[in-house]
Length: 128
Image 1 (cartoon, helix red, strand yellow):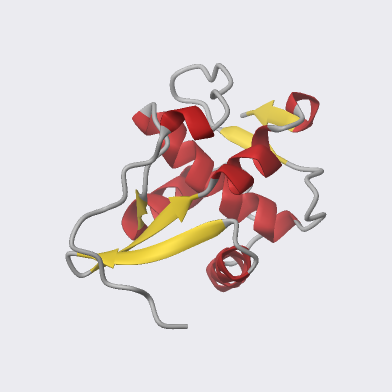
Image 2 (cartoon, one colour):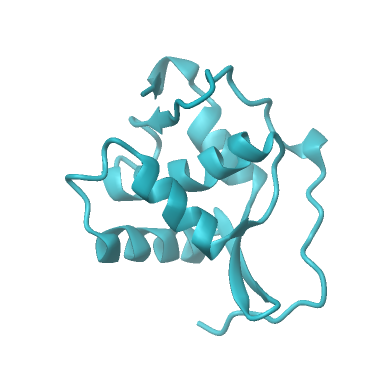
């Protein structure tokens, strides 16, 4: 898959996305039981959503931020980096995430579809 080069990062219309749940400082959101029924996809999606929660807005997530969120997750032990990377690309292939290249770095752009898949059922969210 060729990643498109952009001259500016896309600005996401916050009205197209659901509101973030309340997350105490220093904590992260864990998601499970999504439509994917795949822990690695849920973990990868959670890394993107948590980066946006940390920024307090839906936005493109720099590749390094994605991996920072991955390493900050207390559930990292059962996952390997390569498995999560494959899951991220599966989310891209399925249209939940877009990836663009800006200033020599990849950025994961969340879509409303991703946000709704992760945040639609708050009963399935946990804070750690």
